[in-house]
Image (cartoon, helix red, strand yellow):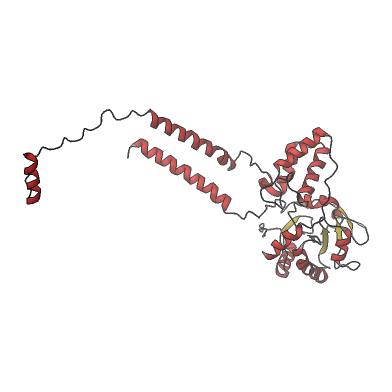
Length: 157
Length: 185
């Protein structure tokens, strides 16, 4: 662990090389767009286009080389997934188990909306149960408490 | 409980179970671990220049003897700790295996000092702009790749290799390709 921390600290002193020569604007736009889709292997959650690490720069060079060689976007993505698997893609493709990540929130949203709509459509109870009328003093059973009886007698007057 | 309530409860339980499964799958793995899909596949060919004499080294010319490729840089602290392990293995097993160092993102001056030029323990190769490193799926340094005599990538160690691991991986290189071993970071 210590070695890794030390390595990361020292890595910031790695001699930086400039990226390879830019292509013409349309192809360079493709390079940047593809770079935004590919995960940097030395960073956490950054694309290779956004990272300043040497490994990311080397990968951007590779993307540029493949674009210049006339490879399609899918062929270039395949180059990286053939090395790092789908981990290389910042946005998981919507197939297989990944489909759950895309569909489950949608299903929960639809299900939740349906439940709320049903709850709102349900009619309110027709009449409320009337509260029992207060008993009169005569109806109350006699109490053993002489003080309470005295109060009741006073009230009956 | 009404029939409708039962269905709603079961649906919610199923959705929760699926969500938990997806989360467990994601949280159950080390976020620093980068998958490597080249195991068992032919090693990408390369032509690199030797750091000491500039002679070209072509992978396809090296078939017939297992190869150990060690990526390093002079600015990498763990590489300094690891280098003696690879040098020792190269001295001891250099007759049976071919050991090469590959300089990753470094200046040649610094690399020469690091490798002990003009008498390095094993040949060091210069990978211009890390093209070959990207082909091998490197995620940082140090990393050590093991290629069998038929030119198949058999394993990768993505941390500073220790003598015991080195011995195990070298021995495995002589065995027929079997169940795939795990990369440990």
